[in-house]
Length: 139
Image 1: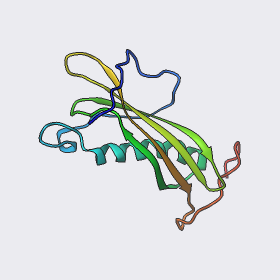
Image 2: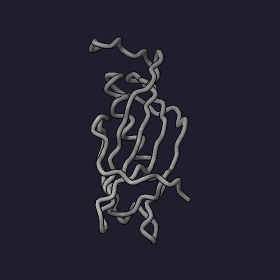
Image 3: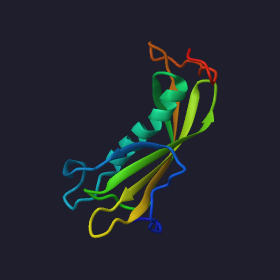
Image 4: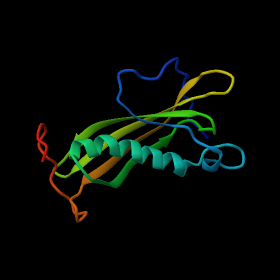
């Protein structure tokens, strides 16, 4: 089941592109529908990119606060993941991730397929939580 999402004519230009990927047959069931778990892993990767940049180093996923599959994803769809930091704490970074599919079949329809809120924690070399560096510092 999906939540009907209107088709778009272009990908969002005002958002930060974190990741683009093309699901392959190994990422899908026998009918060509991409596994939700595969999409979740791509969302986690996309969200970790701005989180690691803000943390200036290693981060670990500590929570998936929300996850919504809005439309199915098919083998051959070009997925674009946009990730935006929405909140930071002492050690944590919460990232909003949206995924759009460019349907490459008969038309170049674009639909929003997934949105999620994921929280990461900055970790040190021993994988223990560490304080986020102040903005504008490299330590």
